[in-house]
Image (cartoon, rainbow, N blue to C red; front, side, top):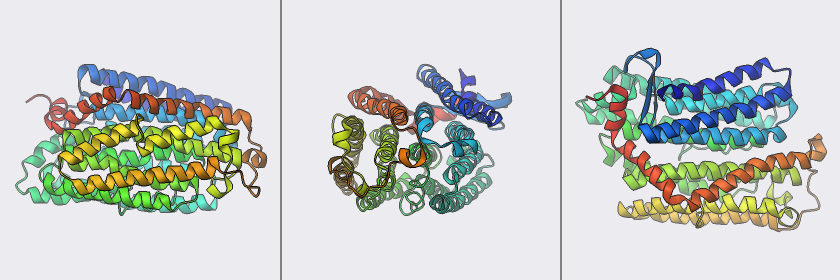
Length: 503
């Protein structure tokens, strides 16, 4: 089944190209947008089944054996991330049918969405450090254009901040790649892991690891490198905000987990302790920023930062249970956070604003939408039996086992503030009466189909809410699968032997 690993790259590329060829037929582009995601979802399920049944899958492109050729690798973590990428792509593609205007569609929204997912999957699947840099750049270019598409003043301001800081991140990343290549003479990550262990000075390897901590830390939006995210994620259409919230910072988290479990394990008492305290401060600063916000998507954007702290907390603990918590938290958060952004778009469609002071009355007039908000919001806050509770419980137990009581205390306190901020949204947008001075709804202003559009937008919201509940009720199964991922990450020989061959 190794040949399947090419398809998560080939399918978005194919549908991106045919969408460009159909640039004069917007209806066809929309169909390609949804169809491409469905095909990608089927392939991603097949890859996960292959990993579960056959172990780590490796495809050596052109039959050039590692470390001389281009290698694609899928272990449990990669398979999970490719699958969740396809699910989020499909959800956003359906949502886009009612959220993206014809102007943005005519300027290539759907081709850009496909190519963005190709770049994301490339980062997940590559077994080569330089190719990871290349896929990051593909992702950066397409995400920048999606962010700026529409040419609104606020969008351009956010897009410039976004691309500037991410270019700095890319420069630091490339510098780190050059240093490691000079030390090891290879770019294949499995081969590099073997050679880094043979370097005479572990301190030199640890120094090089800081380049990647800074670079991937910027992309993941950890403290103090997160300021670009809340300045940009609330500016484009909701569909774009949702796919960004789902995937872009999580790609940075994935990269951190990958390199700090495969490459940089020489002085874990130093490197991973730094990661742990970065995680704690990221959680705290992100949620404090969220508490202060009065705009729906800005509040959610700060919460992305806060939740990234939980995801890398398990990596900092560097224990089997900690890594399980990180993997499970990434999956839970992608689903819940994306859904909250999608709900914000429906609220805006109904009430005409993202500002909480202009929202209200949604609970009385749209009780079903209120339930669809409560499920991911409570999941994010960690209410049992939803998925967020089990993810936070796993990380809490892992932290207590490691005697990191201060970090655990911060994580629990942040959970309370998360509940407060979700309650704030519900009280303002759903519970209080609708203000009389609210702006006109978007459907009235722009002529966007109202009821039909809202029904289309509700389809992915319902599906993601169901996934949040299923992930919580079936937490035992999903945690066991996450444990398989953690065991692969902590036992590097599995990955190395799969790529280089058994010694």
